[in-house]
Length: 307
Picture 1 (cartoon, rainbow, N blue to C red):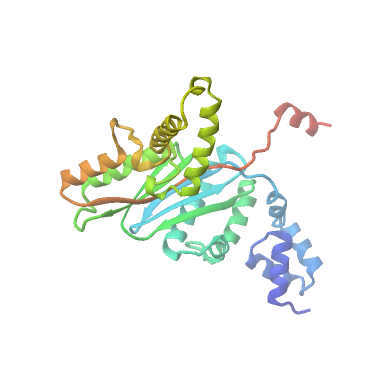
Picture 2 (cartoon, helix red, strand yellow):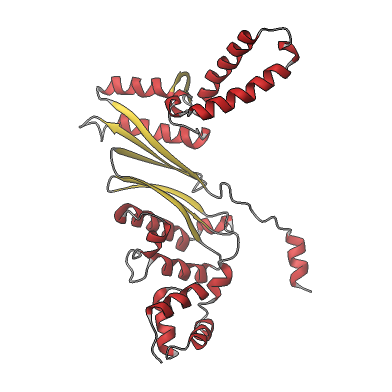
């Protein structure tokens, strides 16, 4: 019985096994789908599908500069210790390499790319890693910067990954002070997690909503009971200006010298090295951020296993 490309695709979706292994299974089973599934189960490959449904909220956030291209990726697994597994770390670093060199449009495109040093796709290699490591693994997200000067920072072995992208005057790209500035800004992003790069990026809708909240809070405060509306408005605007220093990277107090803002520190370094420097953007990934983690009770799990 012959098989088609659609059969390979269906078998892949049914089992979560890589394309090449699905082809081998269909060839060995003469195109019979049920026998192909059995073949994969016998080989221990289809077990990856069961693992694929488990929550992956740990893993690693990784940032790197590869041939001048800044990349940050988050790859999730089920437990925190897997981030120390050499196979997993190697997989994460190779994902960053694929993102840098192939510039995939999205996760589907990334998974379809060839894995470095292999004839397998990224998805097929991921399924292999799932089987070997024994945990569900997923590439969650990635970002890429292919212009300007990029500086990477990885915090606590993969808890947070940051890329900072700067526009630097020609000739200053390799200046030690400029690179140190990039690292310091990346560390600031990791530590304080700003929502915006600059206050100019804060939308009017965001400001109006924040003013609305603060107005209600101000009017409910007994201290403001006898104050006229124009005074309350000034209090709110003063609070918003302080709020910018919390949520906007360039307006935040610089972590190494809180007497100046990040913006002022960047300007000071630019003046010192005699070259224009502009922080153009950044991306910060924290592993497991926003993923609902399954709460487990070890005693209950052990008790359930021995029943």
